[in-house]
Image 1 (cartoon, chains in turn yellow, purple):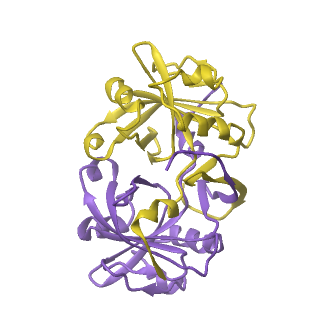
Image 2 (tube, chains in turn cyan, blue):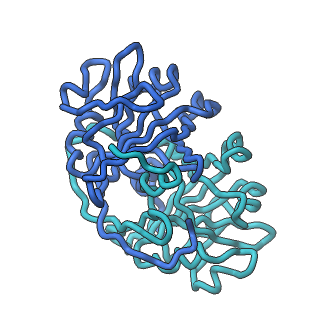
Image 3 (cartoon, chains in turn yellow, purple):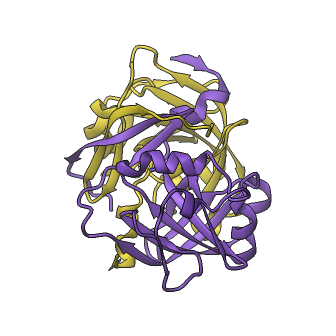
Length: 176
Length: 176
């Protein structure tokens, strides 16, 4: 084993798929690109995710306590990166990037029609927001696009390097 | 968009790679298999992870505040699943599964020689343990095995279905 600089650790521990997080405030919707999220409970489904206070979406998520996690397949990779490279401070990303907003059932932020899955979320715990920008969310409603079959997702390894989902294997796991 | 039952949400939001988490208590080391983890800070590197209080490792991690996150490549997939299918209550998993323990620099839990990366971690925030089994860790030291080049990891989609890392692509991202 060889020592690795601590600044490179995040490139080592691959995140879950790149997702798009929509928010809405004062009648205006916005969307950001995000990698640091994880399930923390099966049912009710709960998710932890990091939204930096350097992101324009932070204020909307903090103020409204609502977001939608939309999961793009690989064909949306360049759009997802373009969303991450721009800020809602400056432009309407939905219009600029030709993303279709659909109304959610329980929250004000929109679903994204082009994504293969959309999760309507509500902030349920704020204790770690100040120190870590860490939001605890509960998923109120989940949607899938049944026309997108076996979608492959992309995972960000840092600085524009992404790993695409490969083959699926079956192993005799007792883990849920 | 079609409604999806909430119980299936965790199969939709693919986690990061399957990792092995080692702990040590009263001179005895143990290891579990885990999927729900994520980076929450670049530097110092901090990680959030869920260790259920139904797992034997929960008590050791809570009591000692130390663990090692060891990342196995695909060739260790069946070993990782066997670790997940058994409990340290009943057996010495290192001996049974022929994993080589190496001493860590800053913590008592061992590194795993067969893994391509090992992260020595310390619990730095306990506020969400009781409610969510959620530990906030800081990575004190990171190790890689330079002989394992471009290792592919596996991601658990539930009930024995795993996605293997596929190809790597480059996109012009400004995201770190």
